[in-house]
Length: 273
Image 1 (spheres, one colour):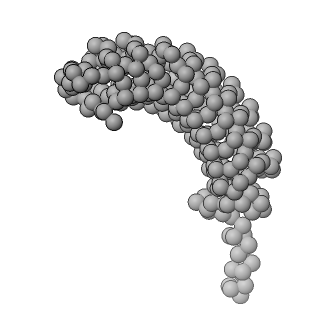
Image 2: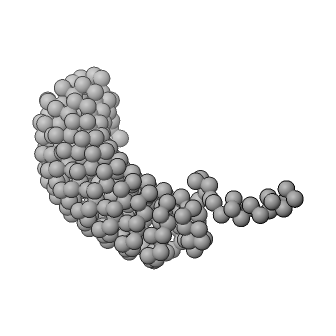
């Protein structure tokens, strides 16, 4: 009788997926949508995601990387428990406005797409800590980016940016900023207000000079300025008390310049590659 009782309970136990279970098919996930926490449908050559994905109300992690997606459905904004969204290596030109409804979202990985803009609603993601947008076609960013109180890491390398929103200097938690390989002709003044910045990448932008105010970024540990047209580093940078690595290769520095940098920065590793 006990055995029969256990058999009767078996459907109850099997209908609930463990939080660590990873679904690899949207069709399978939709059988019991309330029990799906992780969905990995990467590398499936998908060209579209159906609106039904919005039924996965408890989804924590969504992996759509390495597909052929050109857009995401507005229903993705219904995934209010989502913590991590991986959409890199697709053909996305924009993100849905509803992404601002993902109030639990902590990390977005959207590198290597065709994004030309971000929705203003991205400023509603108050728990976002990582925003990775390397190698897209972004020409500008919304002022609302400065509204992200927990944003620690912002990756913007390899876009078409000519400036940054002034509000970004108000992002209180920003520690890592990759800006290299953009169309900036000068360094945005908002960087002066980044009081917690530890890593700053200004590489490969054709810069012939650097601003003095970087010397006031007392928390800076790594500075990437390689691949520019620099022949000197401002004296104010010698005041940086925590600078451990200075990347200066592929610039206009002579051997004498390099030796002088080593003398001026005895506690900093001058990186030549």
